[in-house]
Image 1 (spheres, rainbow, N blue to C red):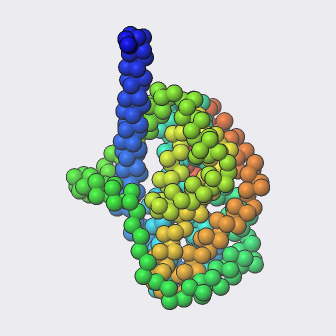
Image 2 (cartoon, helix red, strand yellow):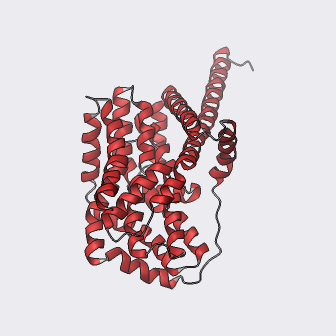
Image 3 (cartoon, helix red, strand yellow):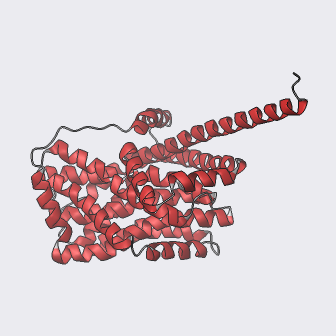
Amino acid sequence: MSTSPHGNIGSLASRASWVEIVLKLLSIIGLLYLFILSITLLGAAFKLAGKETAEAIFGATTNPLVGLAIGILATAIIQSSSTTTTIIVGLVGTGLLTFESAVPMVMGANVGTSVTNTVVSLAHISRGEEFKRAFAGSVVHDFFNLCAVAVLLPLQWHFNIIGKSALVLGEMFEGFGGLKFSSPLGAMTKPVASEIIHYTGDSAWLAALLAMVLLFVALRYIVKVLKSMVLARVEIFFQRYVFRNAALGLVLGVSLTVLVQSSSITTSLVIPLLGAGVITLNQVFPYMLGANVGTTITAFLASFVTGSPQAVSVAFAHLIFNIYGIGVFWPLKRIPIGLATRLAEMTQKSRLLPIAYIIVVFFVLPGMVLLMMR
């Protein structure tokens, strides 16, 4: 029985196609590692330059606006809400900061953490429509956090709606401690980032520059490889299995962030997919909210180590703030999504606008509040 030459050619073509797909998937995995390494390195560089500064600006304050500004600025400086909330929890646990002062700071940390994925979106800035999609996807996280603060901070200020619930829950966990959890991604990237910083002579700015170069290279080629694959198949995979409904997106955001202990990483991971048009802004919105909830795990772990009910209450305040925010803006998602879409459209007229937005929202405005009100 003879085999058709056309059948052999088809079989070889099919194998070659699968080999190409596997190689591209492996290249995406490698590029994702490079991408996560760049974020880890960037965070380490900012910590090297600014952690002491961030700790110095924490202090007891009875003004919620000042507390909010401290949280935003400290998190923007060190590029990690987990670090900020851990510092806050530690200060409350040792009695150097009151619980009442800590709650607005935690809200500010929630806002400040979204600076990372907004910076990540700048890697697409030279490519029109792609940048518009990526930037809208990054700032929808910002606008959700800002809208949540606009509604919940006055309610917390006047009625202590977050504080009361958090204190009750914190007292229930009195004496509960000794938990530890290590991020697997941290284990893979932190040693490499430490070596890179060592070879830069502990230069924070040189390490930050190198991190930005790695970030831009990784993102550029992630998008390129995704586009070179059968985009329709990739799109179907994400729409059918990963982001097929809002609840699944929310759960995925929570789960991934708990696993890697960094909402900056989990939210930044979807920016290239948004830029490539694989997923939509409406699909990614619940995922961003889930990442906000997932990032509270670090504060819980830090608070359980202290064994202080007040410190545990701060962690609960972080969680409750995010749950209340979701309760308010899940039905009103048109507001943050609409604001993000409008701002992204405006960036098409001026490439300086997104850079100005980052500087003003995350650094200038909170800095001015501190100067004028503290």
